[in-house]
Length: 180
Image (cartoon, rainbow, N blue to C red):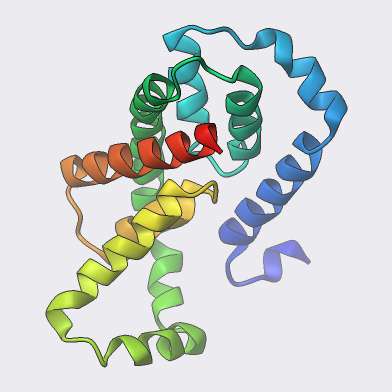
């Protein structure tokens, strides 16, 4: 039955993300993970790299919140470096694995309906809107797979550009998470 869906990889990614969030929202899981957190730059780097993966993002958010770093800016800067590593892995995976589904997705009626209002904007700004939307997704606690997928599947972005966008957006997102 699951194999009959048109977008099984995207559906699986969504379901895994929901499951991980439900699991980590339990107080007992947070209590069990608290002793693993230390005030070291390496732990912020590792947690930052986990922040990018949809099925692990809720764990990373919880770990950052449990860590309660003395310097949220430093933790965000180091976590942003780890997040770039994660996003680059996602980018490579999506470029080779999801490309077929993006081709189909572009032809779907819902995508064409979303594109209609975008046509009111001059064509040269379309990529900027896509980059801005993807950047907001990357900065948010939403799975980076969605933002990186938009950039990998719908643009011809270079890896260095993605790395810069990823670092800035993830660093800002982690910093906001830590100061709230």
